[in-house]
Length: 197
Ligand SMILES: [Zn+2]
Image (tube, rainbow, N blue to C red):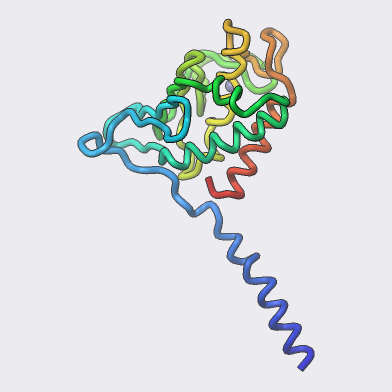
């Protein structure tokens, strides 16, 4: 009888764990068809942050409500890490245009996260074109695997110093990006992964 009870308890404890292994199946993307879906969408509940699709067909976009959830996590974590109010972080993202596509891009040159300069058809999964316009590649059906959070950090640095978004990250040629920024990105993406965002 005691053994039976143990097995029941063990079963109850074990099952949520098994179920938990299924996460990453939730899809947060939608297939595009501009006849029924606008290329431009406002992200609800944000200071005029817009989602833009690179193409009109044979492409995908993140669901706008899910982008809002990802931004909420980013703003909250940034605010705590850098000891600034959440409203100031939102203000630093005002009017941002987030372009999204499943089609990869290459650039002639780029810096890696350590500041090393890479040349010749460098594959990138995100770009900060300006302080108002970023591009993010859809890597899976969830946002945590994309460069969205990384590009948001470029935007905030760019809007703070007005001149550049610190393209060499932790490198020494440009200033702004610190280890703290890199850690913040990892932490936010882990939260998004756990939340299936
Ligand atoms: Zn970067």
